[in-house]
Image (tube, rainbow, N blue to C red; front, side, top):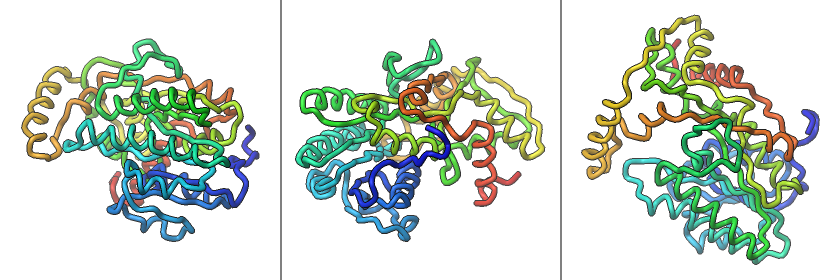
Length: 342
């Protein structure tokens, strides 16, 4: 696909549904679908803030994505469904909370879309987290699964259920596994960028700390392309930048952009795992977020390095955002929000 080719091949006026539309990725996708002239509907929880999308002609369905009544009404008549919704990772979240949002919702949507003879494609959003640590990089879509927490386990469970159900019922679908999503509008990298502006940048352990990013613009483009591409039918794609990047390299790019220099210091990771376990043990029964938790510490012990060749070769999509440019773009956006003070 050349840079001049239109991303969206869905005909104007086509009814499409987006779940998770009020989230960072969902908002970007929703705006693109509306701009393409599609008839967009979206599902949002009753507590979700619709204000950022109030300028768009979106039909809203308020309720949980795992509520059968809500989803039956929302899915009816849709020709495309983009299932972007994901559970929040919070101390109070249980395995069942993750299963409701990731697995039960998938089952409801998959069964409901089959009632429409005009239905075209279900685009299911998963995560590269289903692969866990990549010991032998780069990992393709066929790399062994090793989910590390309830969020990732239920994302994998949803994928596996969908693959089996689709094979039995001839459901047209595509699965996308995003890398770490970032870009203006999100706060995922804010803490890291703030650390990069300090004289000393601390890493835990002796690992490479490789991180694979995907700019939200590139990610939502792959969603839209996958919805109509004939070779995407029944396939799974990792969506990410051309190359991974080390955590320390991200910090250096930010520091350099703002005229700073940093010194990277490594600390033993073991004591931090112990501290995280203690914090979680104390905080979880109280339903409060621990100041440090095992998943965040484990972040430093895992490498995420993926091969996005299938996305390029089958979907014909070349990422438009390089790591360096995307990081600087995000850093400047944080500054404009007043969240980062160089």
